Length: 119
Image 1: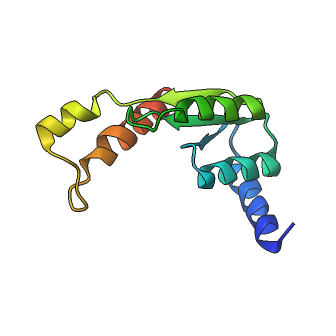
Image 2 (image 1 turned 180 degrees about the horizontal axis):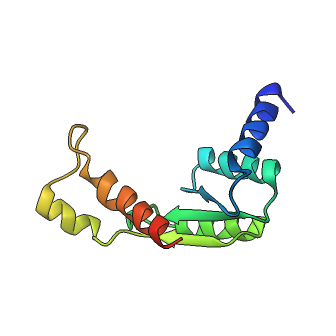
């Protein structure tokens, strides 16, 4: 293993040691897959769970892929989602833009906050 990977594994061990359960956010992308994989390499799968935020606007097949990955790793999959429909929000607020990224708040941050309150 490279020095970077070993250093990352050490940092994950130190950071997660005080916690009984670790939620790794998995979007279905390659970056979050690496984060999930290296976390499991660092601390094992016993206290790791997957957290997927289903925004309701993902590409076809993405949620099935997320379910498959959690299953392959033998991990519990937690799915959080927004209280609002993206397209209804677009009608009310307009399309999200670089300077007005309301979608991040309503589709990701609020569902994450709600999940954290109940976890």
